[in-house]
Length: 149
Image (cartoon, one colour):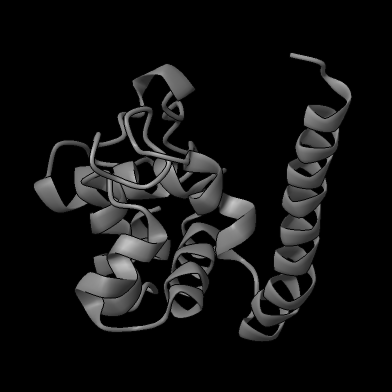
């Protein structure tokens, strides 16, 4: 890592530092003023260059090296474990958090839709929901005719 880490650009280092601080790609993109895709590209390239198995290991390697906490060996890679899912904490006011209303509206799947896909879903999904709602309403009104008071 010692020789390889010198090959990392400052942009890659900054993105990995923010990963080490617990930021996600979209948050990093907002902080750095670049796109989400640019951040992911920087992180992926940083992982490749550092020889880490994932972004968290690369981030820990960078922060440990910069803090002077360890001196990596040339023949032996620095092995750090990824955090478990239980260790990842989501702020409660963030979309997708347990207390957030309707978390499925902000799921990862929804975030990856293009504008064209969102418009298509709005054009198809909303009319279907409206038709189903009217069907339920009209069924209820029809049922009132059948009920004898």
